[in-house]
Length: 142
Image (tube, rainbow, N blue to C red; front, side, top):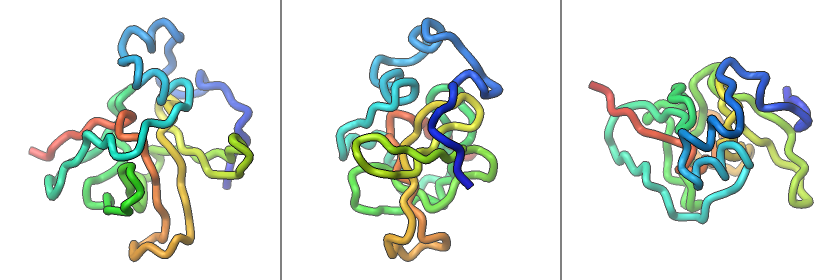
């Protein structure tokens, strides 16, 4: 189910050099998407409320989450109960002295956040995809 964390970010359909990523991403986006940083809690700029649309990768614009799968987990980061099929890859993450499930954009390999299971949320999957808001863009349905 999981791939090991030892991987290169160049094995994705959208591949750029570090310089190319730096040219198109803000410093915060680069730190999170390319260097696996985490934004401070409650910096969510993607509060779409009841707006219908799709959350896309801030690095490559690939669709990641439907707005209908977003829920309020009161954790300080955007939370979704499932990704669009095939849009996210999962890896075991053993950083910071713990084992977690990292998720990255399947198209560009950009770090999105982590998936947590079995926390008891009343969602169809009992999963919480905890995503850095800086990793996302919102596109309203027309």
